[in-house]
Length: 485
Image 1: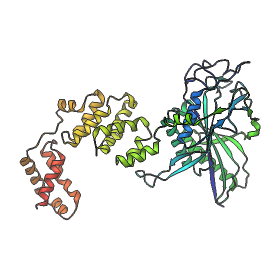
Image 2: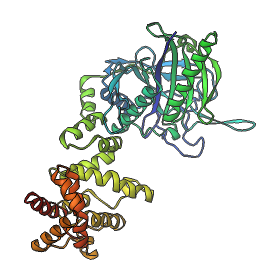
Image 3: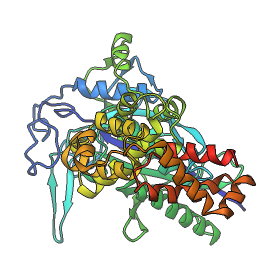
Image 4: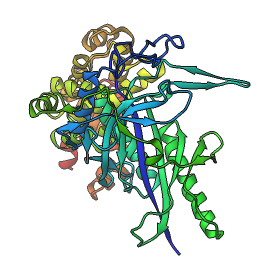
């Protein structure tokens, strides 16, 4: 019997706000343990929660970007459980009336080749709700210590429908969701800092069956690659259990990305185990049209929409857009440079940014914001090359020095003597005649229709010109002479 996997993801995203979800104490990462606390975070007697409106803005904006229906009224519930990282012994969350319902995440699956766009599809969402994060347990050899700095941080839970069928789809989903949230300025989504965490719900069923199989929740997926690897591992494990005649049980399993193995943690809780009930200290929230309209105006162009626009408006190859667009800052840098360079030069701009700028930044260990090379300088260099004022090899040298010094390309070209030397038309023609005469085989091939044979003449001409002839003029002169033969 053939089986298929059914996968749904629960993604928790820390919202980037100055203060925590229900108190004014600061939210942050990297502080001394238990310094970002107050009586509300520690659940001391008599304390009451107060909503953080910036966190509500963030989840509504996220919902608008992902095509969700924004609830006109949402409420707050207590999710009851006893665990050391939750000082109150319950978590303020949302159960039956979340902020966002429905929506989707657009994903791209790998294409038949790396240089073409793959299949796009929309993974439907169930809901997005807002809650407070819990503290962090730090386990030692003989004890466990609790740091409550994270407790109370605004946390979005984004729940997908069980609509993914492969580990690669889940990887694409998480990658796309992360890019969208970063574009919106909602969170930095740094998994190493716990700003984005993911649990995967995985089951298998016979192909053609519509009923869901026994679900296993996979935890401790602390990188996007581990999400993909963990899901692939769990699918194989479930198939092996069924093939051996065993029975799958609903449980939570811990995945170790270093060893590629998982182990059972506990049987999976159901919703009624948490004894949800409305929080008596928090009033429901009404979201009117004016509130949504204000946040809709702040929504950015989404990554795939930007990529489609770059492909259409700038005629930039997919291989370049697939590097530019995932990085919002880099794609903005490209667009500013392309506009300064002028029409028809966007592909050259993209090549300089993707190949040369990123190489220099990587070698120097610098972020784009620290680069001395600004869009106007890249645009000026592209214009110099196109005009034939600077040749390609000289332009490479100019860029390297421009990255190091921040000087304009014209200044470097003059100082280093890298401007192309104007060539006498008669002298250039003679060099071309000599090159053609020295390569009768290439001449015969070109006349027989082999276009690439012309390159056999260009090398000797450039050598005679000591590398400073304008390649465009060389090509024109050669074609003129060849056409007359």
